[in-house]
Length: 157
Image 1 (cartoon, one colour):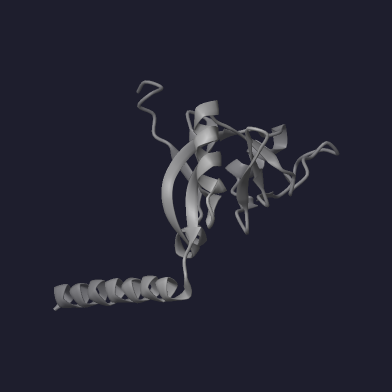
Image 2: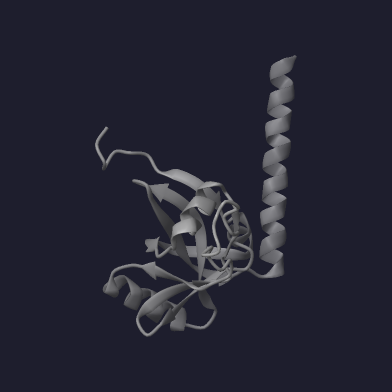
């Protein structure tokens, strides 16, 4: 299997972001990490919580992203809530910056995954949903569950 064809390994998907926001365009970014952060990520010791991405001086930064300290680390373990830099091309950052300058748009992390042994973050341009949109999402989800249950129960008879 060549490097290009190697599968990516999903570490975590931010499902709350998909519920709270309407997601527009997405962008795959690299992330700058310190030594023990990678080990904590591979051990699934992190949380999206209320994380977001902001553009500052032409650079992307991930804030509010919690990576728990590595339990076998030394006194040089990383700070759990530090702001981490995201890596993307300059033109892509400018495009995201223009889009988020519009009222109601923000950047949120959607997925965290390994790709060719490098940690990647999928960032999406998001617009907040209203309460009635959220209720509609819940209703659709419940209908899908009911239909799948009904189909499963019919298959057993």
